[in-house]
Length: 419
Image (tube, rainbow, N blue to C red; front, top):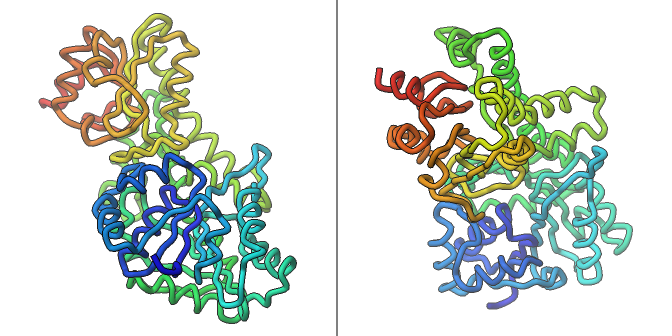
């Protein structure tokens, strides 16, 4: 392959589909990652994770020779455009962790040349783009926005919808200096979606508050679910009362609210918040749902020690193989602390788990932790009735079978569904 037009540093769930999409539009792309398992997979023509449409694009760009791979960050400096899609964690003390970004910058600094652009694609805290621009200017003396172009173009695409949304969602670009936004906007214009120019800080805030909005929005029905248990009410019926033919309704349904973006991104605001604790409270609600379900099962079954509990789903979201920051793992750990015999089934993830039949056999309780479409069928409900212990407890915060019971028994739910 000739000199790359674009280098994408970090070829995980954000960076790899982006690299493939650039290459599919005729740009010469270099994908860079430190994980041997990712590089081994893509070099062998295999996707290392589930992303609809990606295997076909990977095959196409590999055949076309528009993509190559490396494990050396310094190799990215050969490209005119460098896009950084690294994970952006926070420390446990509500402090943003910039070590990975600084490490990449240190590798790139000796090789940067005038005319190149640096784009931060992953979620970052406010003023991180300004930090990157200042770091480059401090150590290399480049005029940002004139000689080197630095911008934040936040990733806002839903899991499993990359190739659908990259061409439709407006692309926000927050550039530092006079021409950074223009240069990076031209790069991303190859996808045909609208380009929205703004400041780096507004781009950063728009991204993190998109996720904060969803995280807080889903905390409300989760808290309502807990309140309904306290007062002997049905959360699904209460939500229906709130929303039915009411123009100011809009209450969402409860469930596990997690995933690597939603769980951590509130920390990017909380670190310097003028209202400290508000978003932590929303986090506390969502994080309490696994314990709420375990305690609810205990109230109905008694002690769980020695009882078999089937957990359906490890992924954080329906129809995805992504387990990052999934609350299912927290649920499993809590059940194990109760000395329950935990059996797990998830047809999407790569983590070894049991078959549906093995998980359900003689289970005293079945907890739907992920609302995968395979679970929300009459066949799965019937399988629970046939294979689980007689009249097993079913815990379904997602209302998978539209019977409106967070806690119900197999015969009860089957009758409600049939009716």
